[in-house]
Length: 254
Image 1 (spheres, rainbow, N blue to C red):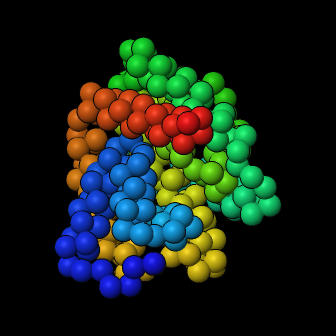
Image 2: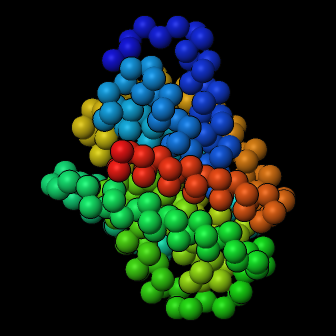
């Protein structure tokens, strides 16, 4: 574990956090940027994952606040989602201590491939259908518990699944779906971070340096997403999902 990082390394970490926060606030997947850098400076896997959750929590908080402040989403409309996601993430973080994630690792690339092609060929993502396919409370019961559990248990692609579920099941436009996704990501991130903190697997100096970049990147990215809508979000979303598929498939099958 590096204890004597120089100024240039901290500058790299700050810029990495900024880029990760920018991408994550729009389409999720900031870990694709942050984790390789954390591994490259010599952090062991559990330390890298825990430190990534610390810096990522700042980004999702900043993006969530921006979406709420600008009226894209309303906090009081998502309380049930936050509650069920919190419960699901806590259960997932507990369960990963007891079992292996191998089966899920093999399943996720295929599910993300479905999300990728659905988003690629759907034409009405900017406006949404406006017609929910299930009651709001039932949706958050199922997806809050399910995706919260998944994020606490394993994690990659959570934001993509949230956005896809809100588009497909709840008929939301992509801008609102992105805003709610950030809120739910922040909720499950905090739970996972708590588990890593308890386990002593967070390096605060590194995480807080990246967090400073995260806050700036998340603010800029979420503002652009709010202003430009699906025409801006969609290509970023598709790119992140595709890169996540490649990363997970390579890690799992090769």
